[in-house]
Length: 114
Image (cartoon, rainbow, N blue to C red):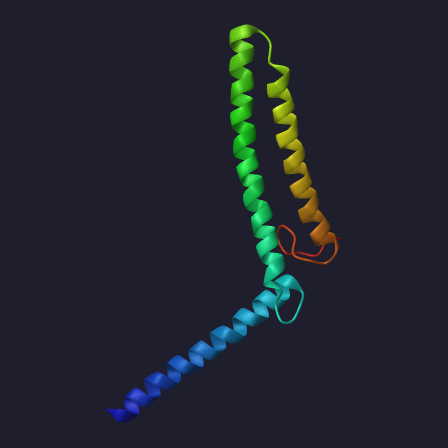
């Protein structure tokens, strides 16, 4: 009974050690640094979340503009400017992701740019 328990615990510890080593290796490859730079991953993830949020806002603003166009035959300049601002913010976030990627950091998919 005791030998079985020792084998099970040894197996669990060995698996845990291998998992930790693989975790460090994978994220070192993704960030191209050792030890892994999780700040890069976190920054890229936050930018992607902001881009998704801006895309939803742009979609909503487009709906507003389409309904104004259908009702009144024209759109308000303020609403059009808001759409342009949202598109500009989204473009800036995308450019920031590409800039990180070109500096050798983690970009959209972690592959080095050509």
